[in-house]
Image (tube, rainbow, N blue to C red; front, side, top):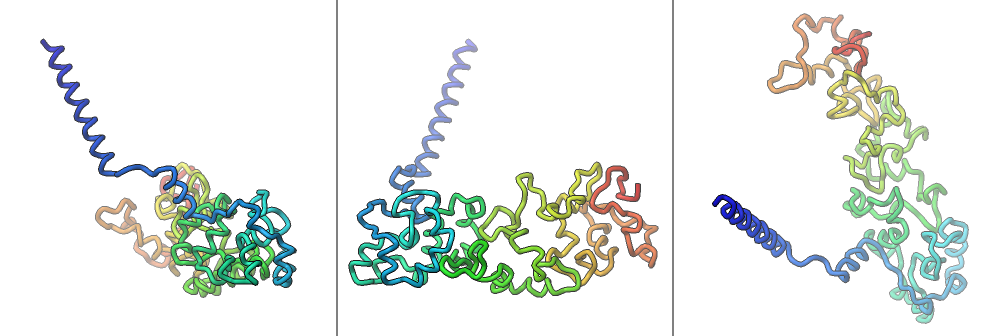
Length: 322
């Protein structure tokens, strides 16, 4: 008698699961058709017409735009077919501006050709992403803070007359970044700072201007390690005893990454004040409180005199000298 009951219960359970699945699918609505998928893909980047009859070639463009063509011929975009692909839609002026036959035959009607300076940042960037969307640097541009802020490729790069040959930037990278990020510019003039103004490092050494998954578009490795370890490898570990701050907030828990008035880019002028931000008798805090015999007299104000392995230790649980 038990077997029929078990079969009945299992059958009812299976019917319930199938019914719930059907309701879920109906709620979500129909999936994307092939046509919708193609439209969605096209919305991310420009798709050039493939009919060769619509293209006229660089020599025709030169007839009216000799100065532009002359400056363009010396760039990497002209030297090779765009994106490493072949065909008139990937080459010369029309590789970026689109087919030019209608524009040429109309006597130069600007409405019949794509003009970057008249297009929105989104539209102009879509043209660039037709080739660069698959690039390691530019793959996340659509989700970047610059994209959401309506900053396009042409705001920083110049195809015809770049001020800096590397990456075809309009000006030096520092100049371009400071045009918008004025809040961090003073940090690089503080007594202790990362030497961006001196040209030893660039903003893009730490941030990916084309987007990323980390906060503030900070670069990280595949393992999620802080970009700081690229230069400060001796602080990376792994350590047998880790400083919890390194594992949670990271280097910026104690250091100001752009610049500081304090040595070692520390956020506070006194080391003990920095340590006390975590090591206090606060309810619910995972950080151990400052021992009672540390009375904060002058001799105890530099915690790192004893706790020298502040980033991590392989021998002492209190991060003290081995």
